[in-house]
Every structure is written in C-alpha cells, then in structure tokens.
Image (cartoon, rainbow, N blue to C red; front, top):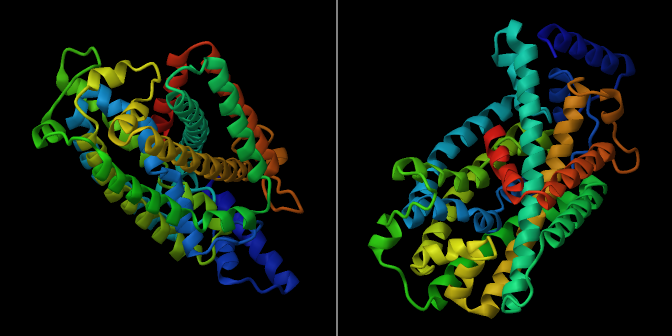
Length: 419
C-alpha cells in the first residue's frame, strides 16, 4: 500500500465514523488513524499477550528439538556460547521491534511499518518482499514446529519401549499432519477461547523449565567438568575449519528466539495495544534469553561426554538420549511429554499469528485472491479461511518427509533465514 493509498483509506474511515456518529474507543481510533477499521474483537490483555509472546519461543520444547545443531556444529562450547552471544543480538532486534510496534500496532507488522520508514518510491516492492518473506518464514516455522513435535513424541515412545518400536517416516509424517489439523481446529474457534487458554501458558512454560533445570541437576549421575562444558569444541559438521562449523550452532538460538514481531500480528486483538504489545514482546524475549541460556548450560553440564554417540543415535533427537542418561527413563519420559505439550502450544499460536499475517496481507491486496482471503467468519470473528489454507499448505510441506529427511530438515533453516 502506497502512502497516498494509506492517506485516502484513513480519510474514508474517518469520514465514515463522522457520518455515522459512532464514537471509537482509543484502540479503534488509533487503528483508524493508521488506515484500518476495527474488525477483530480485542480479547487479549497484558497477561495473555505476554503468554502468547512467550509461547512463540516455546523455551524448553523448542530448545529440545534444536539442541542438535550446536551439538553437531561445535559440541558443548557451541551449545553454551552460541546461545549466549546469539541471544544478545536477538534481544537487540526484539527490543527494537517492540518499540516500532508501539508506534504501529497493526496485524500487518513490519511490512506495514515499511510504508512509513522507507523512501516512498521503494515502499511497494520492499513491503511486498518483506510480506512474502515473513509469510514463508511463518509457514515453515509452524510446519517445522509441528514436525518437530511429532518426531519428539514418537521418539519418546520409542525410548520408553527400549527402542523396540522404531518410528518410520510414514508414522512421523502422519502424526505431524494430525498435529497440524488440531491447530486448525483450535484456531477456528473464537479468539476469546485461545486467549483464555494462552493466558496461563506462561506459568506452565516457565514453571516447567525451572522444574526441568532442577530435576537435571538433582538426578544427573555425574556433572561434566567446567572445561568440557564451556570450552570443549567438537566439530562434527565435516568442515575442515572449526570456526565455520561452529557458526552452525547459532541455528539453535536463531530458531528459538525468532519471529520477534509475531505478537504484533495480534495487535488488533489486544487491549491498549500500543502499550501492552511492545511490553509483551520485550519481556517475553528477555525471559526466553535468560532462562534459555540457563537451561542450555544445565543440559550441557549434565549430558555426559558421549557427543558422538548422541549424534549417531537412531532417534535423530539427541535430547531424548541426553534426558535418559541424566534423569532415567521415568523422569525423561515425563519431561519429554511435557516438551511435546509445550511444542503443541507453540504450533497453535504459530498457526494463529500466521493466519493473522495472511489475513492482513490479503487486506492490503498482497496475495492472489485477496478478496476471498480477507474474510472473518461472522460467528467466531476468526480468519477461518486463512487458517485452513495454512493447514493445507503445511500438511503438503510435511509430505516432503516421505521423500527426503534432508529436504524436510531444510524447513527448519528456511524458517530462521526468512524471519
């Protein structure tokens, strides 16, 4: 949308409000000043918005399924220091995005902001590129979260049965698609339902992470040395340069602490959005950075020294064997099941903000068939068409796993790169 179109749209909305004599509340009035009318219900308060922002990172759930990358790229040192250094960079971006969101609280997020901060002649192409990169990242992010959740669940079952059961590609693909469908169902409900559920998620997420840290420290049979935990570099990438291999370790933190403006996509459903949304983004990402680093250090401290064995495990998820080593079968099964639950919530909110992103992009005519996709179901006020388009696309992406696990794993990288 060009600056001229935006100004014209704002004038039309303002004129309509004046003609009908309707008095807008402060949120709707601010949205009208930005060129849009209020269409969603504002069901999110500060707690539910903070929980929503925290659920995007997923903390112990997403750390669990991405711990493979630093372990593979540089061993213990990469796991610890890539998170520490990477989280500082991520926080700089997150706090900046929070400040920008306070000025432009719309579900369009950064592609809308571009209309105000980029030279006018470049606005259409840059907004279009940003919007499509974001949608690609959001889709692959939701897909990879659900695929990771399905993989973790079935590998947990396998571990509990002493590896008598070995999940096939077909099993993992089918479970992932079932998870995707459940997210489509919950996101087809009224926004008040998801906000009510999300409201308490931060307590579960933070409490579970702290409980996991304590359990690992208490039950671990033997801690690794300080030198091994913080200084041992084991390059398993095949690169001759340890430095280049080490850099792949940043995939862990860049995947977990990503999609900084996802919560801004919920701005049109948040009360006092210009204040509460940026507070939620900044505080949730800070929580993730600090608590996540503590968790990564503790996992590395308690995992033992058989890095090669973890990487060669048939499960493809080193965290399963690490938990088994550190806590025993019963505790490992319980915490891995909890990781799956947290990943399920992460995937649910990913589908939620992706649907709002798609709906908003359609509102500004950025995708084919915009008139059809810019639609809210009258009874639920949910963008149901967008939700089930996402379910369809992600189910098709998941089918890639039947042909190539390497191609499927590339979805994880595509998420971080696009965001």
